[in-house]
Length: 118
Image (cartoon, rainbow, N blue to C red; front, side, top):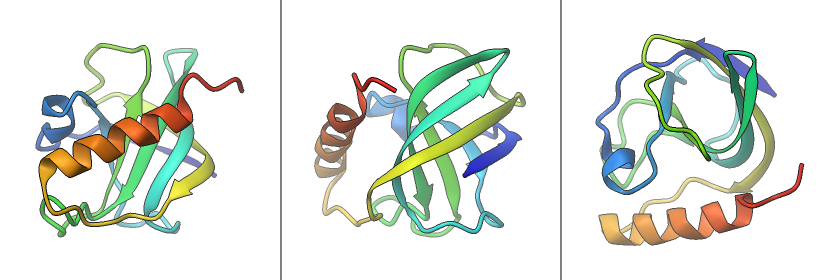
């Protein structure tokens, strides 16, 4: 599945956890919540990524977002159009008892995604 959208501002929690994300409004995206191996494209280039779609129950549990952590990219994508290709689902969305537990799971998820040959 390919999802296109304009990057919006988030709470920047991913950045503080070492996993900055490009966020898209996922209110009207018809796909199951969870963490996905993905590819993000913009500016004529494609990048390996790890994407979460859901309501982030460990943080606020309210608004539904697509949050793509783009490996090997640093830069400002706010207000830019990106394309997120979901390649395979890694796991369902889950609630963690602490932010440190969430951070450890993100590290495990990233290890499953990268380095991965596509």
